[in-house]
Image (cartoon, rainbow, N blue to C red):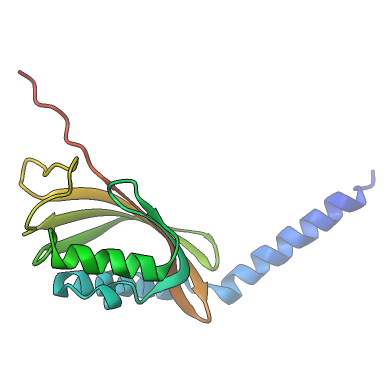
Length: 167
């Protein structure tokens, strides 16, 4: 029985891709670099520094905020954060916890985060604080490695709605 040429080619390409994975990816080093990037984001937020908060973002980042507003550039991300750092989120404190970190490809990382924000001046209309008084969100960051460094390509943030209490 002979194997069709297209199947042989597909198997060859898959084998080459898998063989390249260890040569291009040191998962422990990648995880450490991504954790450092997240820590730098938290530090920049807590200092109210929009420029530093946006530093590791690609120029063409896709950004969805907790209100569902979307933006398509790092400059827009930075400008939006400059506004919120000087208004309702002035003086706020951010904490982020990585819930999942996956590498669907050697140069792509999916980072699923839980966030907690405290010390804010107010919340945007339609966004409610949790029972502990903090704002809680789930944040998905898609990161890509470019030029040896990880960059944020997509940033999708949604506020966590608290379940209504029983009466």
